[in-house]
Length: 220
Image (cartoon, one colour):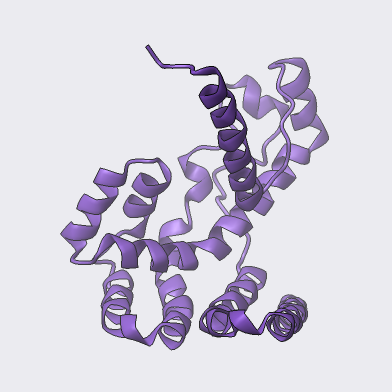
């Protein structure tokens, strides 16, 4: 009950913010209306998502690191496959409402995911890993255009990624974990978010790209 109440408060605040942005920027009205349902459902589902629970994994601590177990491994995502059918059920209808021209392909994608005839993990893994050719091949094998797959799966994955990122941030912030990373491994990790990392990456590319161009630096 408390989790749903928190979700409601989060969604109400986001809706008010979107209304304010639309009022101040009428030229963005069409775009905001298309994405409004998606953004609100993402916020609602993120707040309602259960914390990933992998019973066989102990909470990260110094003993875990000393045994050679990395902070992040495949087991951290043990519930991801179980969440995809729900992701399709929750997110794809609001995508269709915002982008009706994609209705047919989005409905086909929803059916494929719910029947477990398509594994979104493989496509997103290739996409985020920078393997564009592999992502396109996976999209074609599934019978979907890579553009629609990228749009749909990233929208559906965002609440899951945000939830996992929050849990990872908690683990990194544990005193014994921070101490071990700093004293034993010489690492000083900063808790961030996917959006913050993207902003930092774009900024670094622009900064060093300017240096390279101004000084005529070449790879050879």
